[in-house]
Length: 157
Image (cartoon, rainbow, N blue to C red):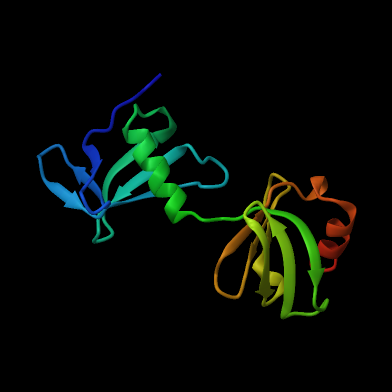
């Protein structure tokens, strides 16, 4: 089942997202913001103007008709960069701050974990790990990780 937005969504020649509301007012540089990016990624989306005010609420954006759904997916992919940790290779020390070397779905990288409080457990058995620059890494399923990775992570959980 496809649904339609009340207003219209497009891109301008500069690549900015443009929302045209039901009165015909054009809002340039809008952002798409998920309400529940982890628990319900296709539900609850707000189209927010440059001033931070909500212009439209979309209950199930995954059911929107193309090309609007595609525009939103592109915008969210740029906005919500969250690499997935596939393997924890090494940690510099078991106290914090510590430097972690990880293999992600985007390649190998190093980051600094400031404290244990920067590791958040998710209800689905995953983790969110925030580095010292505020970049969030995701572990999809702690139990599915290899034994060495689980052993290293257990030291911080």
